[in-house]
Image 1 (cartoon, protein in one colour):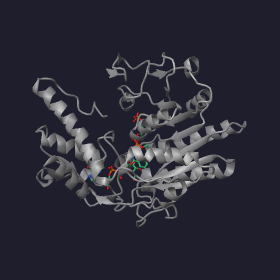
Image 2: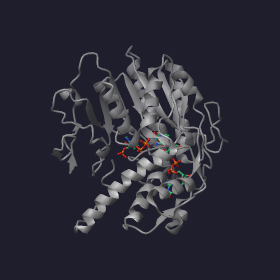
Image 3: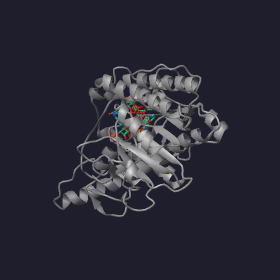
Image 4: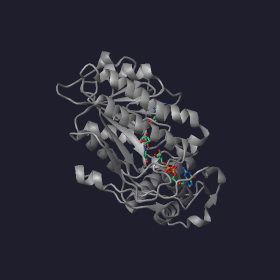
Length: 375
Ligand code: NAP
Ligand code: GDD
């Protein structure tokens, strides 16, 4: 059962509009944004950010047999109410006809293409699907946008690129660093990037590529290493699990806070000219260092609990990512607000609270469904 922002229980079926034009509420002069991947970590932060700025936000949600809108519960409101600023539409980045229909119905001023099979390790197991969603999915959206603007309508677009595209290129990586992708995911993001550049040059589209380094939060998916660590260490701390199985602890990443990074996406679209920007903190830490900081917040010695599982190694690894975001700082004054240590602390505190809830329920004899409470 999903719970709406007002605490009202909902079966969720009314969250997503089958025919958005029928219930469309629009204030005069209000800007409209369309977000693909709105149910993900970044999509949920971006939707909040844009609603806070007065936008009407439309999001594309793929149909699933289980709820996938939990991260939006804080901003969801009943679409039958007046002045609702968030509308969800069924769609899929692999379904071009549906994307065109949603584009026509929502008539956005800005599109943020965040939809992706975004897990690097999984992309080795699902390479074709990853390419279909990440590379060809972007192409489908661009084709729809190309036709949409051909009649003189205006629209700006953000394409979610990734530091994974730099892959094996030595740090620090900036906009001039050559791409050297090391996974089907990264290769697909490089293809999407070049599709975007080509459509910008060919059709005069105001389209900016964000080359975003890793960004995390308490809403991060639980299979990415940071959240996997904070979830596990806090559960270990409260006696809910014993061990944590990880892969390569020496990989280094430039980890920032997702809330800071969605602001950069928006800032890119507010510039007079489209361009490509690296967004990063400029600091790099190893997985081992992340474990040190997270474990110290928990008062644990992680070495007693962490074990190696080769399943989490990647056939080709990205060893060091460290971004240079000076172009974004100079052009539009972007700088990260949350540092590494505060980010880890924020995630640990959130997950400690979840673990405490779980322990309380477990002690009271309830069966707790793991992963059902990402905030
Ligand atoms: P995420 O949490 O994995 O969210 C991905 C989103 O894409 C989810 O809403 C997911 O829907 C949706 N999606 C997946 N397949 C889809 C499909 N076939 N059709 C429509 N939607 C689909 O990822 P994130 O961390 O928010 O990242 C957002 C974007 O930025 C992604 O493109 C990612 O590759 C890129 N990126 C992320 C980072 C980072 O560190 N977070 C860094 C650089 C780039 P479900 O909820 O239904 O799964
Ligand atoms: N996921 C995971 N699980 N990673 C592990 C583990 C583990 O058990 N053990 C070690 N690692 C290492 C990985 O090998 C990698 O070097 C590093 O931890 C980070 O892995 P992830 O958290 O899965 O993130 P990622 O860097 O591969 O990809 C993320 O960031 C990209 C931007 O650079 C994703 O969000 C991508 O979508 C994003 O583009």
